[in-house]
Length: 455
Ligand code: TRP
Image 1 (cartoon, rainbow, N blue to C red):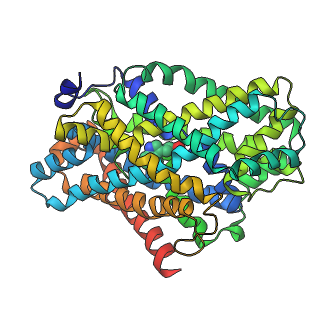
Image 2: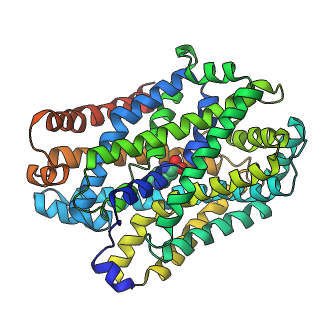
Image 3: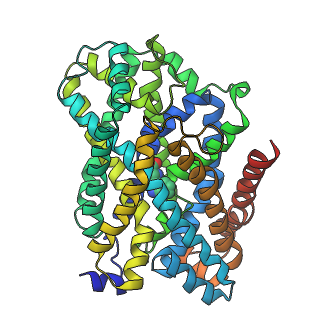
């Protein structure tokens, strides 16, 4: 099995399957856990506007670039870039994008698995009725106790990494396609249910106003930087994950339409998560929007604790979040995995265990950041967890995405691009040139240079 996979990669069985897999990659902790908490820390509205602009003007063109490069090369990102560099007669330096993506993947997965472990732990907390009838102060207490227990957190981090390894070891197609097809819609319905709950019980007007009111006074330079970084993170672009998935896209699938669908699904899930969480925040004096990484793990349990069938729905919800996390995690590791399999002809299973082990080890730093090492700071006030999050989201993904779109729109010969996009003139072609050559790269550059060096 492994040998065939190395020489002829599997294809997604249909356009829908690719959409589900890429949406499975995009929709994850970024939408449900991270977006609400960073929107909360950055004062809501104006942050959301910048985030949406970055998705539309920067994220979507870069995602299209990743898919087209992946499908044109049909190998792991590193080898795809190597092959396309050869075909375009470009500098070998471009393959660095692939290497940076592999490194970024290890770093991102290391902390991603730790937070996904929180969700796993909360499946059992919700299931055992811990939150039933609990006050908001009690719910916060449960979370604080959990953060203070490195061994418990390490245990769930380990479980999540083991699950990820078990899935990727089998190859991306089998099992996963089935699961994504069923779990993603259920997750979506449950979020809508929670939005409904928040409408009835929470302070919906305040939550809505917070997310969609445009208070530009609340926006800081760091907020703009985070909004752009998060746009990359939530769409899974900038490190080759979507490029790796693009390599498995059947030839007849239209890239622009597909990419738009994926980005829309991702955005709707994030906004819905915000609409489920903030009304609860504003209805509880013990809670605050800027609570940080714990926001989801405190607000939702409060809602579940008071909801009829709350223990059941809460359990289901954390199961689904864990699932959304695992369908993302497998894409984070895919570039490194696919490359190692191609290069050394080792079985996927062995490679998965080895690479998973590296991520697991790095993740220990994030586990300790919330307790034993909470006072160990790297670059400013950042814990190890904050630092890894910051370096990947603010530096690596934007730089990677910038180079990816430059390569696809400026360097790659027109025949290759045309063959992938399916048009070579007219409005769509011009739109691609404007977005890919100008808007996306200049957008990244402006935000990056301004927020990093000039502000
Ligand atoms: N997009 C996922 C989320 O929002 C996380 C993710 C998956 C990711 N693949 C990625 C982030 C590649 C950066 C790069 O949870």
